[in-house]
Length: 281
Length: 321
Image (cartoon, rainbow over the protein chains, first blue to last red):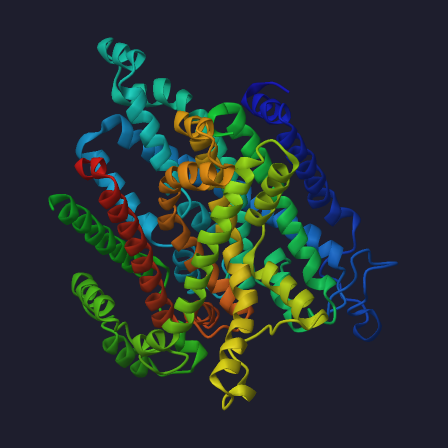
């Protein structure tokens, strides 16, 4: 593979940690993409008397839930949704964060001071609470709105990071030279500073996916994210809370799927960070 | 003393801006917090209008914000839809349980987390180091609510070692003080372990890095050359200097613990502010949810302030910035 994505993947692959992460992520992505095609419809209920709460075994690899739906099929669908939301929201978040950081770092002065004060204030409100407040007005939040909200609440850290890098680079000779040659601020921001902050941004984006997946699981667990009957990993654990002691497979497997997926993403992120900044290892 | 005034002023500005943002979120979301009452509770439009007046929702935005800030500072942000009682009262009742849980989790973070970080730094590159790194990565990937349920399943339901819900056994209400303290402690174990796991992992990671750096310093070599025991070298010389950078994290742990307590208290039916917030979110109890959000925000701002001031007291160079 060529291009920036290929280069990124090769960078992660070069580290044992990154390789483990990529392999795990690949396996989970296969389950998430092809699982829902090969497995029974996650919404289909069997006979409630004979088919509900069947332990893992023949016919149902991970058992069935209290509504006699196949747990594996629901985990696969939930995983797909979780990965999709994670990637989209993290992309939105780092794009916003990079923009704000570049503007603050390149322009400096009053713009920088105002933007960074606002970021300070945003960082002071725990992300979960902002999301709870924003989501509480919806009975069922539309998925695009959920992506938007998760993205809009995830950029603050990236903006600080990018702003810091931009301020530092701004004193370097190549930026001074570009300025002397008459480059405007936008050109400096995007042609000269952006390529130099791409590395840390990439790491932030990768780790951001895991954060979003955990948040989505938590919100769905509290009944405010993805709502039933749409299968989500956090929602499944919530739905089966009344039976979790007698039929633990209904909550063990969705949780394991979250842990493995977030772990895989974080391993890749750590490998990228190590590759880009050997000091942090 | 100028540095003190500047930093406190900054914290106040941050808190005020954060309140403005919370207020903005409340106004930004489609509809208003009372819109859903129309159909859900079958209230007449006049009744909804009366409620709107009561919460000041019929006032111009600037006045509403002023009312909101005043309410937030006095702990008076309206009446809970769920309980029909002032939210300030509910929050005050639940505060001690949350402080006990959060305080215990912080204590575990500072002791176990820092100790494990030192263990890891000393075992750098060996099996123990790798094992702890993997454990910390797994901890970061684990949703607190799921971990809590799994621990409850294993240690509570299957092995019956520990209670899995609440803060005390109602049957022991008349028992001797000693027995009740033991009962509280037993109820505290699972929620604290669940809540502290992520912050222990974070503390361990930072302490490892700081400790590796400290152990490479010439004064550590000098101490070893003087023939001091390894314990004295590690704890008296290296660790003292590796502690300072890790203290910065106090500001980082507080938000982790505040957010974590929402899930952990919900799972273990712990009667604190976290379960109050979780319940408010599920029930769409807007005033109560806002009150807990404001409190969480104040806690984060205060945590950051205390961390910075502690640093400035310990290191005069930082006062200039």
